[in-house]
Amino acid sequence: MSQRTDRLDSQIRQELADLLHREMKDPRVGFATITRVETARDLGTAKVWVSIMGTDEERQETMKALTDAAPWLRRQLGGRLTLRHIPQLVIRHDDSIEAGDRVLRLLREIEQDGPS
Image (cartoon, rainbow, N blue to C red; front, side, top):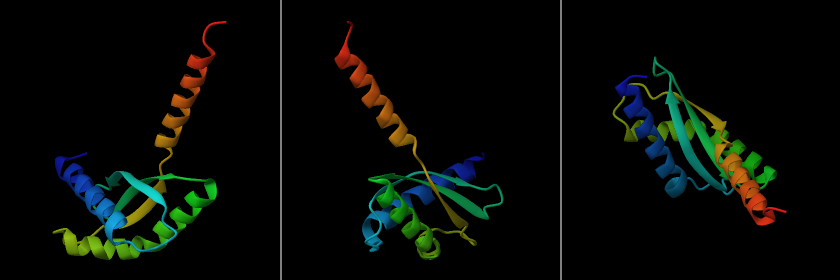
């Protein structure tokens, strides 16, 4: 990755996080965090990874809401970024935080059981 796309990824992540928490009014969006953005080399698409806390049903509803809102989010980015062409947003679920939480819970259980 080039420095330009790294900076763009960071800027898109910050702007999307701000839009998600301050301006998006969809009640289906639960507790979601933008964890990573990866912009294609040609700047045509940007993969946006989102971590969502909640039940499986809440995660599905939030992913549906974010996918439905992708065109709106892209238009909002157009007003915030100084780019000629705003990349298409592809929303992906990121389960790395949930996996880390599960590992920590398992380690706590092992620690509590202690040596026999």
